Length: 332
Image (cartoon, rainbow, N blue to C red; front, side, top):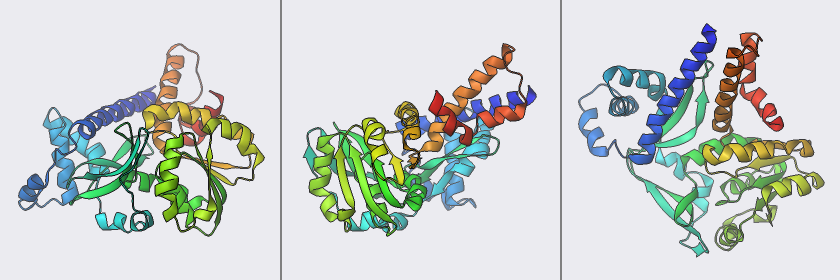
């Protein structure tokens, strides 16, 4: 019970940290400014990242003690200064130009991060203790990135978060690949550059998104001959069409974030059994599994309190592990 209480404490600390960080990112991501950093960094021995984290921890906390805990347990591990040059050298940034175009409620364009504006740049890091570290990045100069809007609201943008979270999935793609979700075609473009990838089928249900892509972006792809676009509902395709074709890998990117991703993730995981020859990969899977993990943990706690669960503590750790949850969700 003591170890379960420790897990409960870490869960609550995760939730508390995520709450204040989400408030910062959603409501005032430009809290740290270039003027503040330029003035103070010259008077401190701390490096840029450390001061950024320290400033945030004090600004987001009620007192010095809680600020110190937020910094030590989360922000000190979380904050990273990113280099604009690294992303500008990305093949998509170098070779694909996004015009200002609109079709229906969808629109192509650009937006920018200001110097020292905070944002999530990668999926969470889950420590052995199940402390979950969000990844907060910033640039020291302005950085613009391609964006597709739906009715004026960002739906997808090719910013550091998308680049970093897709990188491990891009590395393992080979053979015939199905991509669920089109967006700006970043994932399809990057894997089309690989000799080991023979064909790419993109499944997208919105005709306006397809039209925008086919008319303005796809013609710029050097290896567009590898790409085929199918207008279809992703789940209908996964259930009825995917089993009929030779598909080595499937990459699923149908959600905006965790809030709308959990239900869609579970729905697609249940269809994996019909496509046993295809290896599935999922965008921001760690964050989605985190949401599911703590729901399972709460359920286990209730069973323990009611005397309906008497397995060893090691089994609780197994039941909330990523590997276990990836299979468990297929039967929810």
